[in-house]
Image 1 (cartoon, rainbow, N blue to C red):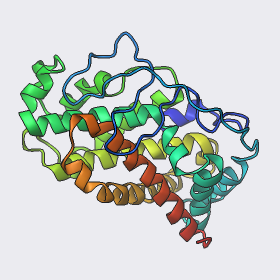
Image 2: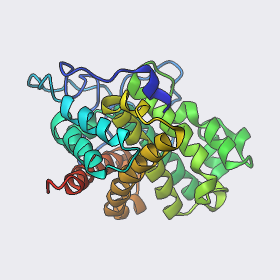
Image 3: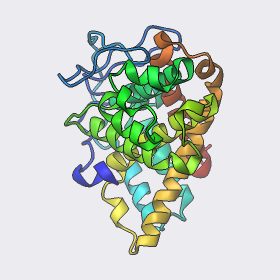
Image 4: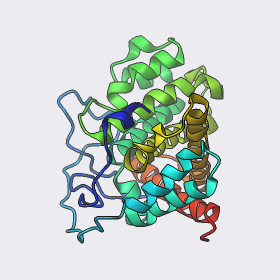
Length: 294
């Protein structure tokens, strides 16, 4: 699971949204501020998300200290079933969004590094479609990667898309990116020079799915994933979770298709934020339906 093995999950006393995470802004507004960049963060370039000064978030109400208990219990039941108890999965996910996180907007807002990384990735791919792979890479001082296999190009983009950091959020962003690179050939993306808008959206779908999956495992499934007694059961559990998440992400991207097709540099972050927020809303709805709570 990458990041899940080293983290015991947040405590109920932790804030619903960390104070340093950038807020969600409506589609069409200026790009959101991101967490302060490290010295290794590349300069702003075409397709990248500008780094602005962080804004002071409003004070939050004291969260329910037991808000993770229900989702973790349901996720454990799902894991013990080897992926067959869809009702428990649905209940775990729905309650994670609605109760543990305080709703879809806050659930999306907590994924600050993943949202920013997704915007950088999509911004780069949009630049590829607009100016070509070589020019897009040149803007990042990565022209040496032009003509290389697509997986090699993506690996070379890692420090731009998701700079190194020590937080769980940043670890999730990098883990999701690595998994996305591994998936590229499976979805037929083998040449950036022939990248289509549909393929760009597929890359976003893969990345957001892996990021949200990692977030769920880290916050409500860290210990539960070890519950199945054999490897096949563990794989079935993770496949079921991934499919469940990807369905909601796919629906969210479909809803945002017009905005993604007409993407501009100044709207990248807001569009990506909207995709994440809508994905969590779909996850809650799908979870309630699966649990029979709709």
